Amino acid sequence: MFSRTFLKRSTFILNSVKYVTKAPKPEIPKNPLTSVYSANNQKANGTVYDRKPFKMSLQAGKTYSWCLCGKSKSQPLCDGTHKDIYLKISQKPIRFTVEETKEYWLCNCKQTKNRPFCDGTHKQKEIQEATTIRV
Image 1 (cartoon, rainbow, N blue to C red):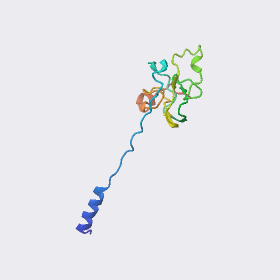
Image 2: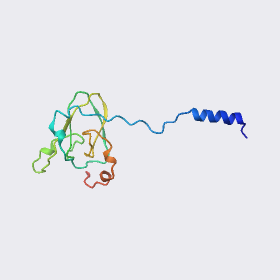
Image 3: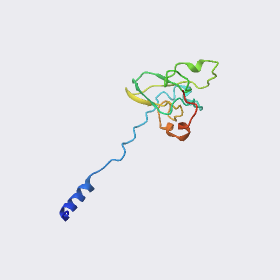
Image 4: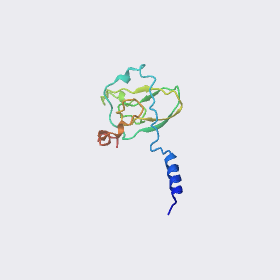
């Protein structure tokens, strides 16, 4: 059996160790161009394109157009599909820029509240069960 001093010492060692159970959540970036372009004020969301976000390397200062309608062939960025008058798409792309060159998670479910960046909305049950996803 263990001696009392060993048990006391091991209890002290165990109590002094700090364990981290979850990593801190990364900060969700903001679009600095939100107040510049009126397309950011659109109320309607587009079609769910995918149930998970898309990781993309973006350059600081460059302007991008994020597809809101969910019909672009070059997701998550816009390819102009919304301009086809026969598709009758009312959503316009969201123009955005980033302040730091690095990789960002862009929303592919098109339901985010922080357009164009993923805010975890795709984890909701309605999004995961959506049937309007690309084939």
